[in-house]
Length: 140
Image 1 (cartoon, rainbow, N blue to C red):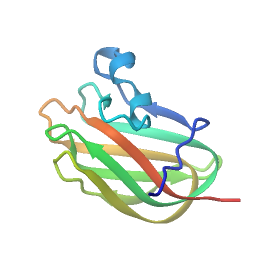
Image 2 (spheres, rainbow, N blue to C red; image 1 turned 180 degrees about the vertical axis):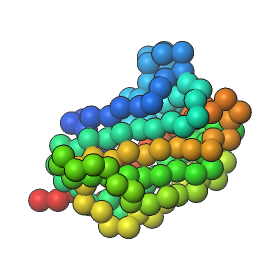
Image 3 (cartoon, one colour; image 1 turned 135 degrees about the horizontal axis):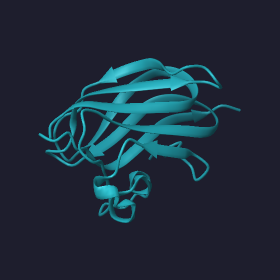
Image 4 (cartoon, helix red, strand yellow; image 1 turned 90 degrees about the vertical axis):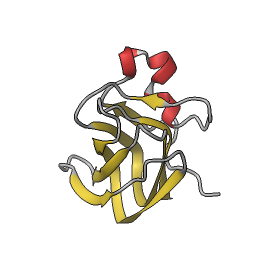
């Protein structure tokens, strides 16, 4: 099994957390590999997750497991290296189900990523994600 490049030194941020309850629904649950925990955003027109890696990486795939009914119909992956502005890497189109979904990513060397979830399936714009993995290689 390929492992995510997200490590303890990776700094993550999210657009929102449901009722500001970070203990139950916080960003740490995106990466804990626990089937029982999740990040649950609050309502809003679009939700996002940013990741700042401790070193340059080459991204090849993005894996996301949503909760059905709380997914996104369209997503965008952006990245940058150093102090560059974020630029679009790829758009992706998730299905509204509970499966772990894998999205191919054109080779991109970055140390910062932003995943934006637009056109959510929930009427209020909430997103629920159990797993978020960034696959690829660490640059040496």
